[in-house]
Length: 563
Ligand SMILES: [Zn+2]
Image (cartoon, rainbow, N blue to C red):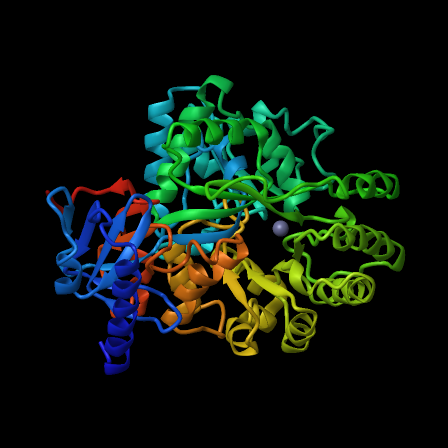
């Protein structure tokens, strides 16, 4: 601890003591975590030793001695044994609820860095599911993450690995690898025309017309595959949702900006909330995006009726998004966009209405030309209805540059950065060449001074593990070790972007994102020190305990707890 940090910690503690004095006779804390390295991520990046929690709030942060003095007879104590604690990680943009509709059935490869391990997982799943059952995943990985053997899967290979099961492995939104049984289930055969729901030309065939097992061509081509794969049965949706949120808590995630809150899954989350057992916070990004000029007319009517911020600190609607006019929604692997004036006029018509209604906007914008074109429209909207206080945000923005960041700052806009390269870096280098090294330009974004936060866009476009994202931001490497971006940032800045700054992107900056008295007790105890381990090990960090609102939602059982 530096002297400045020590002084800051003591100063913060004195402030707490005087605040506590005003509320004399307060009950002692329910819980004290001590003997740790508390990375508070407050404005001064203070490091403390101990933290006290009462109810769902943090009530004090300080040295072991200072916090120990607060203990009462009923205070539970956890000895951190020197471990590092960070605020709960927040992902500002994940398709979390959609993930629940398949999660229990999916064989996820998030963070799997060995192809041999992936093959073992396929075989184990095939055995567990039984002959004839689908073995599949819907994105979240790419073969370049396999350090031992970074190559795609072939039909013949998957036939050998899982001879008795249909297999479909979707690499991000780039391509899907199927075995013979999988192709057969879809009616994709050597001597038959392509099924009508598949995009023309997306089913790869060898010169004899035999399908190779690869279906390829960005989101449009992979979507029909995902649409045909089994969803969890309605009576299994709650179990699948539970497995999903447990996996998120195990990874250290506690809050989410959710692009598209599926009603059926949201209903389950609402039920858990009413029972005080919802283990994540969900802030929905939604609204009536339009796909045609007629739909724009209809959407414009609906925008004025849209009511946000009717929820609470567990579930709320906070943004219009993530699409405004869908023909201008950049595909994931396009190299360039060419937004047309008539399309942009419709986009502007929608945006004008969103600004007029005073709604926050979180909009998908990836490619250079799209970002410029949207900023042109927003500058025009801003003249009629100023957007400065509406927290308008461009999302993904892997191809942004300094000039665009300056335009955004001038408008009072914000940047939600979702580095697709965490898994797609190898694919992006094939398409963009040298340019991929600056996608995203993290150092440029950081130095611009814009308020920005990190997310993933998981669970299909990207992997979901926050310590893998942090490792990428600090090292420029994909899981597996391939260096894919050159603009890296410090561990401190990366962590701030995944916690305190992200609280801003879910409208909870006064409640979440740092470990400070008065904030909600969302925190993560790590198995190793994020700030000092070799940077290549950041992805290997495993939370040993995760807490949401003072409740332990993940516990590996390695910490000593006493009354
Ligand atoms: Zn998007």
